[in-house]
Length: 307
Image: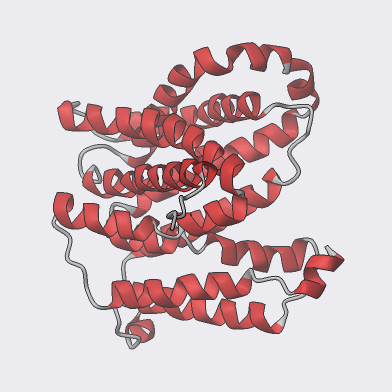
């Protein structure tokens, strides 16, 4: 009897999705590992400088051809650039100063919940029973995580402020994701991505100059340089290409399921590289949050038909 083989498009979809997720998990290791070596705005600034320079040869031709459409949609490009580039990752690097890489990665995957909540207020989508249950599960998981398994901490607000910076980053990414659904069709993906890199970097520059004036100069060493190259090249460009390949092969929904493995990669890296301890509440909160997100984003046959 002939053994069944796995379709090539499945392998070429899930493997790139896993690779992209593993690469992105390293962003939280860098955020935590360099928290005492380089200020957060500077880290974000150098990341996007490297990303824009590396992306330039690949995107320049399409960017030039799309310039008329880009000029027509400058306000849209400005808002998405500020949220997705200037603000989102900078908040992660602020969060890394007081929170663990494991916490950052677990909280980061909550952004689909905020998309559901924001869709209720922005697009008047109803919060159905399963969405409500999903929201309660995710909130419970996050509270368990940020209180380190001791909910009495809520009474005296005794938990890391970095967890709240990361929650704000997740909300920011949710708003950015909603805006992405309305990307002008006459702007290509590569042009749009490069445009957000450059525009977000321009918005970041005044904050970078201010930080340079009020903080001691950064002493660049091999570890800092390697980390900046990693998040600038791999986490910004390579992961982007791999993720696009995955979405084309298996679709955004299945690729999105793979993304929820991000805390597993981050936890392993944090344990071996940063020496962080995995506590009982980390896997428990993960096992509460992920089902909550899936339930909140589940669509019944009637909802799918209506959409």
